[in-house]
Length: 90
Image (cartoon, rainbow, N blue to C red):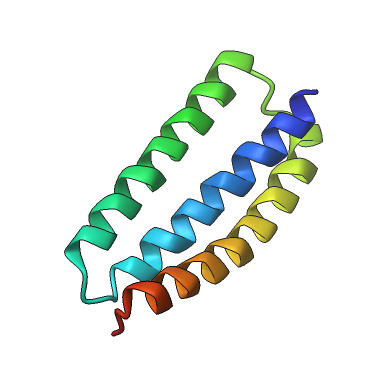
């Protein structure tokens, strides 16, 4: 169960990171503000989980890596969709 939760948190963490990274280069301060809250909130929850469980073993490397890779890709797709809907560009 811990491995599944780790993969989910890692996915969310990198999704939010990709969104906030792209938002920095757009012409909407509101978009970046919301993305930054989302990104930092997910990071906080992920770190809190890792500190509480104290299970940062090599076993967690696999679900963490899988979650982060798919999260980055998902974040890019979500960002592109948001940018298209809001008609914001570089």
